[in-house]
Image 1 (spheres, rainbow, N blue to C red):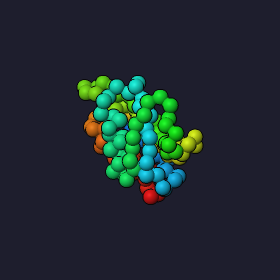
Image 2: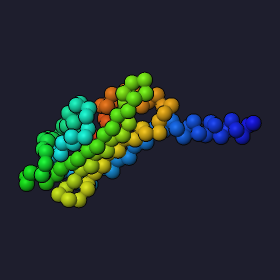
Image 3: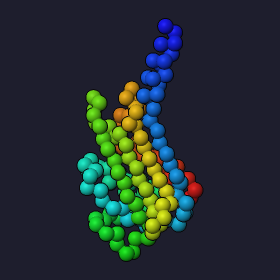
Image 4: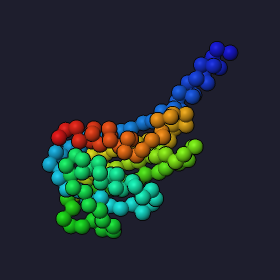
Length: 139
């Protein structure tokens, strides 16, 4: 019986985690960045939030659709998904930053296995603020 309770506890703990991963920018001189609009991301506030995150770290972010403009040495793309559990919440987000074709930074937020974690609820900003602080930690 005790082993069954411990096993159940381990399963519940494993299904309660929110994971994140940040690869800090390997280039410190980024002051301008172009973000490719992702039409598959349907939450209208997500792109403005990403722009806000870059701007609070001194990076002017502009957006584009289609082919990257020639003047965009530093650029980024993103994916994000929301899901429902009593309320909508950010389930997964990934933002990649490039210097031409080389990836120089990454932010990833992953609550896909956070079924019982209350921290999955809350604003996108509250989730991205600490991750972007880590992205720019080397500045």
